[in-house]
Length: 151
Image (cartoon, rainbow, N blue to C red):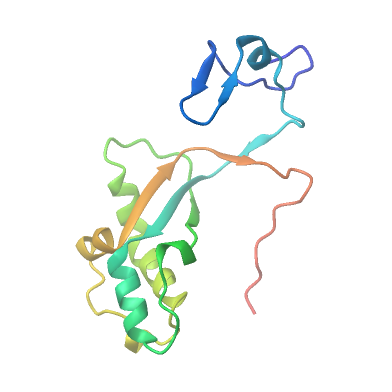
């Protein structure tokens, strides 16, 4: 933390990224400061990325459309309680997997009759990769957090 109260980049030495011509000197790292103070939100998150079987299903539903690929999709993030402490993070994801699976399917096709019947944990892990993170940083603290209202 700099004397201004603004966090500085935590660097311990000079490191260069091979091949890209970028190098950050120790002096520059010590003086690098963030433009604004940011804080965390009292949530953890589950980040979901579809795998090829998801794209195969989506493309089978809309055969006449341009095929979906990994480049077309963005990760989905789901905010969860930040008070978990488990060795196996899959237990955190398993708790929410049925809902997440259906949200991902709904994002492609709103007709549940077109969804795969097998939406088990095993199928979930075949169709999606996931990551659990314990900190959510608010990079736009000037905007108030808002929840969508139900119609």
